[in-house]
Image (cartoon, rainbow, N blue to C red; front, side):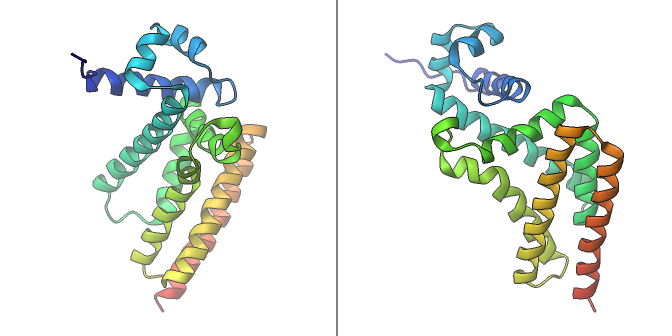
Length: 197
């Protein structure tokens, strides 16, 4: 008789895999070092989460879920928050902790690496950028932008944000980058204001 893996144990283990990936990066990912770091056997890791590729894909889906949970918590407490304010909140959150910045870096790393290098499925890689962009687009439509304009502005906003995160990782120049963020969000606010005239 086969055993059904404990779903709570699996979720906890997956969260620890996400933390490990964020701390050590995707190119260095291997099962033996991961199992040592997590204090479990490679057999237990594979039993709970599957092959290397299955673990990677599940971990990136979980990282995306973690970000959705954070965003939904913020919006539940402040439902009228503008898209610009939401991006500001993400920026502050990311800058508040090296662990938060590492999680953001991990998503960019996953999107940028080739599937043959990363082992990530195409939809998981695309979601690292696409889900953010789509969420921004939906919120801009809700703020009154026509769908085509919302798509363009969401694409620009996500590209800008991703670029700022990369610059932050490379330079650590928070002051300059926060000023640039505010300039870009001003453009977004003007686009929304124009659509309401």
